[in-house]
Length: 257
Ligand SMILES: C[S@@+](CC[C@H](N)C(=O)[O-])C[C@H]1O[C@@H](n2cnc3c(N)ncnc32)[C@H](O)[C@@H]1O
Picture (cartoon, rainbow, N blue to C red):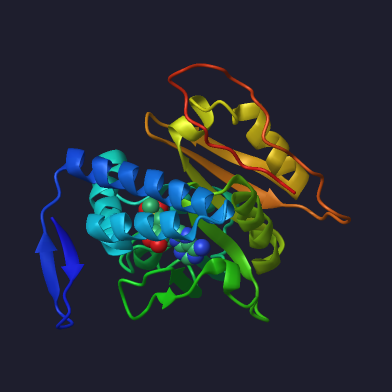
């Protein structure tokens, strides 16, 4: 059972069945992409109409409730459980600082682990006063950088391939040298896309100066732990390229411009 913030400041329970959650998430992503495309084309009226459709669906608030329900179904909990298992392998000393980008709930494995001396959490739509409400792309880089940045199921929310690349690039600014990026995508983004596969995502990681140190694929999700390496100079351009044709494939893509 999910909870929805009410206008009176309390919370109202919203029952979402797994199928309903999936439907909301899918529709929301389709509409976001449509809206981004219409904006690109300068079709203001069309984009406004899609905004109304998004609102009718329940907006970002409902998308987040569906994602919370989906977490239980797809992963038996949030993905920070795997992050904690991986971190235990790589560092004997607790990592000092974690930034959780796209943080749905304060109460997750990272919080409960007591592993971090500092956790900063942010989301476009905060569900908790301890989660900063801000767009990661606009968040100023703090003087104290992070040992770990978590970017779990956020890049696939971004409706444009170039902006997805920009988001990945931006993670580097927040990490200490040799910091770790925990990155998660829905499985079909890599294994059923016309424009993205294992090779192309690995090319993106290499271009950005990230080295894969852990990887896990489940029926629904793909997880990576990436180590940031030193790099200099401009990023190479990686354009949208057809890697797998097929009528039943999706169009997920990450591009670097
Ligand atoms: C599917 S949820 C994933 C939440 C959680 N990280 C997880 O793995 O379950 C995606 C979240 O990312 C947030 N988000 C998307 N783009 C963002 C951005 N540019 N800045 C901050 N949060 C963002 C959305 O508001 C949403 O709450």
